[in-house]
Length: 227
Ligand code: CTP
Ligand code: CA
Image 1 (cartoon, protein in one colour):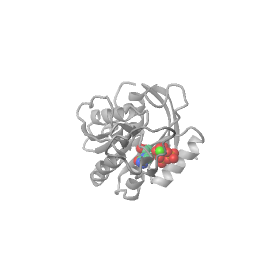
Image 2 (image 1 turned 90 degrees about the horizontal axis):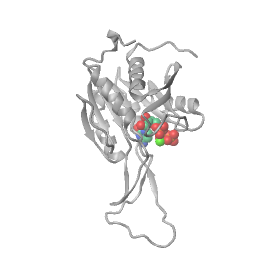
Image 3 (image 1 turned 90 degrees about the vertical axis):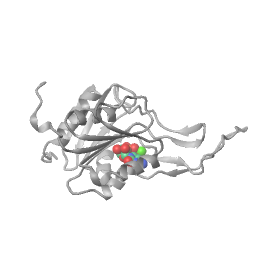
Image 4 (image 1 turned 180 degrees about the horizontal axis):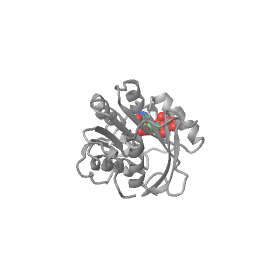
């Protein structure tokens, strides 16, 4: 089991991984964000580098250390992550989009701290760019795109819809309601879906092991559809 298969190698491959949350400022002291810690994406970056890939990790705010041999680009907002990713999309063979990207951002963030007032605050939000969908629209020949999907309901159907909508090769389905899975855990329990119909349930295990299985599948030749 510990024996490395030679075809696991990512030697010479250029891999782009995104990880962590994004933060959308309301004002200088307030923001919209989510509980992502970046662990899953950092483990994918670590493992890809261990297998010989040239790895760039575009990271939202996290407290994690950069894995050995990985080039790290720190970003804060979705717009910054979008720019960091799109500027590199033509030079990478594999993209693993593990970041938990904010879907909305305040329409008119304030440069000054807003003083609280009595009663409620109404925020106007606009959609952020869909980074992965943009990659799918500009997919390079031979490029592999891997997304993550966070679903609390109808996971498999929603995950497959995201494969289509974003022109992905693989999607990794997470259910944050599952024990030991989701935000801030050391472990994860995911289902992998390939665009051709292949699906694989990956039992609960460490995020580093999930990263290995993911890269094994992605690196291997495209599996036959299993219906
Ligand atoms: N994603 C992205 N840009 C966004 C939102 C999401 O690149 N603005 C990526 C995520 O990194 C993930 C995939 O798209 O790899 C799916 O994210 P998810 O939040 O599950 O789906 P959404 O398309 O945002 O739809 P919804 O949140 O409504 O389910
Ligand atoms: Ca989303």
